[in-house]
Amino acid sequence: MKVKVGDVVVPGDIVDDISGVKTETKCILGPGLRRYSENVIVCKSGIIRKKNPNTYWVDGHQRRYIPVRGESVVGVVVNKSVEIFKVDIGASEFASLSYTAFEGATKKNRPDVKLGDVLFAKLKVASMDMEAELECVDSRGKQAGMGVVADDGFLFTCSINVVRKILSPKCPLLKTLGREVPHEIAVGMNGKVWLKARTTKETIALMNAILAVEYISNEETNAMCAKIVKSLQRRDQEGICELKMPR
Image 1 (spheres, rainbow, N blue to C red):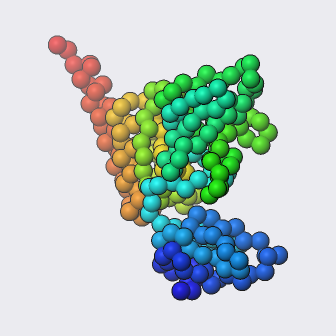
Image 2 (image 1 turned 180 degrees about the vertical axis):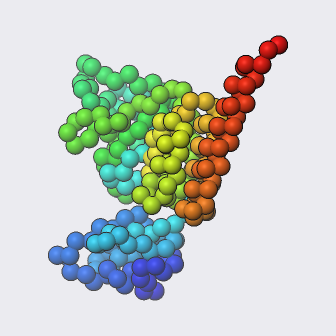
Image 3 (image 1 turned 60 degrees about the horizontal axis):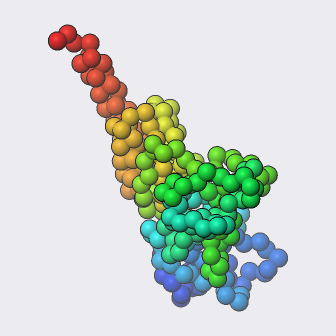
């Protein structure tokens, strides 16, 4: 069945908008689309989306992550050998991470990475026929915020749809809460989020806000953020009053 941008699709559908387009016209195919001969075939259920000028993908609700080259992910170190670490990024198989894929790392100067550590990394290799490979440096060999994150944060999993929404420039969640509730956050395109706020209450409130944003509009998100900030401020004031009360 032939479909176009905005249609609900299922695996096997042919995207009419870009099938048969000349190879000279550059088209970027995102998650859910594969090119076979002259046709672009849908390989997962969802809605066809387009970002100008020529980027197409299938927007669907999923929890199993399919590695895509260049995407930033959050993972947990589950195994280590002589040359590589094995990292769980929520895909069908563990990803590999070389000891030398860190800023300033050499065979003699190895990074201090332990089993169970949470990593923020970027996918260097991602293919259906090859094992996913990670790196913790940018194109200039710099750390750029990647590597092992702090031990005292909180790691949780959400749907990939939530991640795409909160990272969208149109979503006010992270910007609004960032002004009122100081925190550190690492958001992976694989649906894993690492979060650290000043207190446990603030961390839980931020996590619940992220999980709730999937099915609400931007206006409702602003209202929810205001309610969360007001609630946290009230609890802080009550705590201060309790400390000042004489015995």
